[in-house]
Image (cartoon, rainbow, N blue to C red; front, side):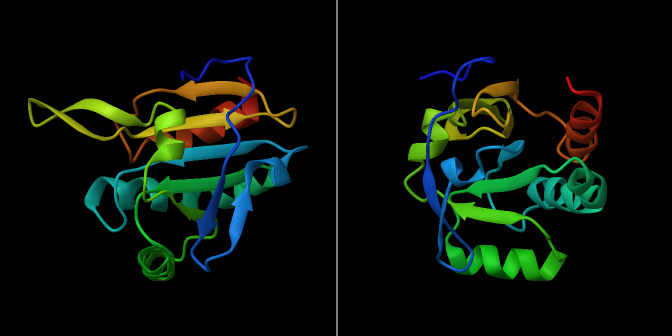
Length: 156
């Protein structure tokens, strides 16, 4: 399945750091940023998460929900969120089914070699449940949250 702008975003339900289920359908009616990242508390993933944290107040002003998804379990998410004071929801996708649906798991280049893994990417889902924008491969994790905020503020 591929993610296409203007098409419905694939439904999902995953557990948050507290072990509670979070369903995409429960966020219908508002913009949602879903960002996929490889692993809690690693350099690139920490820069990206802290970037979203640092622009959080401005994202909140747009009424947008942010969901970070990785294969890590709930306890790892709890520690990561507490350590860096992350104000948004982290979800666990240990079997990578949601990541696969969203094109965020598959073949990628790492240190010059092809490997199978989590592809750092982001999907902006509109209030109608349709994909507004898809950042397929995020190259600079630290700069990405600012670009997402810019898109939310500019509407593109």
